[in-house]
Amino acid sequence: MPTLFDTLALGALTIPNRVLMAPMTRGRATREHVPTPMMAEYYAQRASAGLIISEAIGLSRQGLGWPYAPGLWSGEQVAGWKQVTQAVHDKGGRIVAQLWHMGRMTHSALTGEQPVSSSATAMAGDAYTYDGKEPYEVARPLTLEEIPDVIADYVLASHNAIAAGFDGVQIHAGNGQLIDQFLRNNVNFRADEYGGSIDNRIRLLVEVTQAIADAIGADWTSVRLSPNGETYGVDDSDPTPLFEAVAIALNPIGISFLELKEASPMGTFVSTNVPRQSPMMRPHFNGPLILNSDYDLARAQADLDSGLADAISFGRPFLANPDLVQRLRDRAPLNPTREETLYTQGAEGYVDYPTLNDETAAA
Image (cartoon, rainbow, N blue to C red):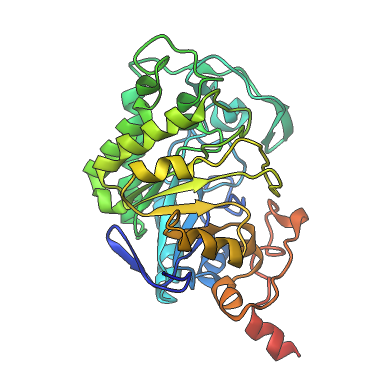
């Protein structure tokens, strides 16, 4: 049986271990959504991961509604990301860009336009803007004429990612974002070919994935889903047939890997009693399957041993432990996460977490 520290082929890449860094929004870009040198330092510190999946990156102004989050639609943003990818590669690492359209989770104060979604719904709660919190706005449904433009935005961002030196892209299709708003039936009330039946609701995901695979190669394309339970108000009344259909549809495209963020009843960030969908999806997807959420070493190895997962992505443990691979291999204690610095704009709680070597030197 493979261990977390064995190599693995992911499409065009061969990674040196199966400890992936999961995507995590951090908010350290500029107000113009341009990556900063501090971001290059942050990612380079974590280059020992088998693969880094970047924080979610806005693929268009329309789709990015998070302050100080990075984008990938302008030349300046591409140039900023080149510094990040070069820093990771200089340390021997690999990094893919996660592409983000937030749909109804945006706010006009940030995008300059009404949010768009599958249907006219509003997310509960408040959006973060540069001027403080504002109630989420009612989204307008994307028209049939607009959907090809959104797909084109995904393709342009994918080309920009490759130009910026990324080792591929990941389509963010989970966590209540735009594609998830099309997939799941508590927010998709469309009566056209993108709503109603499961085949219709998965159509946008399949079209985006195929378009990116055609543009940059399926070996450089991956997908992330959150198939079990409610996330940011998005849920489905019958997730198993939905996500089995997703696995069946993605399989022939030949993507490099599929990542599933699966909440548990005792989850630290999201919790749910809805069963994990990976056991039902696994028989329908022949490519590498990456699982995520609240893993420790023992649970990670158990899912590798069973054949359910090919690798595990770690989120907050990687945030607080730049040398997570070494700490897991040595069974060393982990640094705790400083929650109050997750989304601040400074170096504290971002690039100042100590490694084992730092701790040894200090001692």
